[in-house]
Length: 249
Ligand SMILES: O=C[C@H](O)COP(=O)(O)O
Image (cartoon, rainbow, N blue to C red; front, side):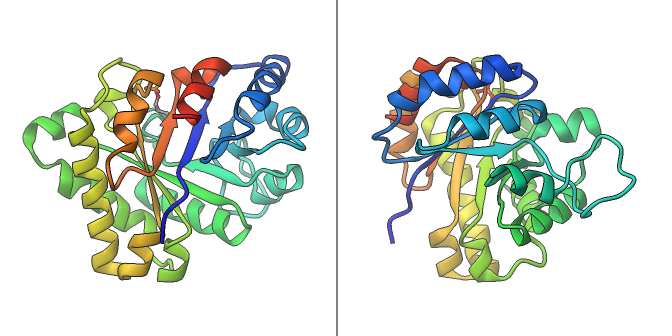
């Protein structure tokens, strides 16, 4: 079974509603023939405007986080109902910036992933090691543990439909893309980890992205790797032409 590539743009804390709407309006005609699934992940305030603006295009919209409870006293959080009401169909979870700056834990990522999946929102579950862990040589075990924790309690048939984003923290926003072989090594290990626990069909179906300073010049080399199924793009997703060039690799 061939996996459809998936390229997602994580806008992080960038773009007002007006800027986000303008960006997707410029992007839509540039990616209309993409063979990859195309996703943009605006900040929360721009989700309504952007979901409206992409109607009739092949651009899907993702959120940058979601809470596991349906509603209640959780100041600053967003529920799955609030996202599905807008037509949001993906959600980035466990990004290293959430883990490092806002105390996101593996357990929280797992709870958010279940809530999103049950609501019909495809989780894009992030994992990735720091430079210290990379240099200590323990990165494969570290990433495997993050994935096992994030996927706990999922049925094999559901794991097949998830998206994982491998983002080495040392490559995010630094201009230091992992080499194609470094990206492939970890993405292959993630697939092997999933196969060991959930079986061949889950490992064959799950889509694994690489993220970390992906640029138009590096996407083709990454996509040639058998275990890299797409990219989670930060900085280069803020310019329609650059993001389109990545999507149309
Ligand atoms: O979510 C996206 C990643 O953190 C990558 O960001 P970047 O492309 O700016 O390095």
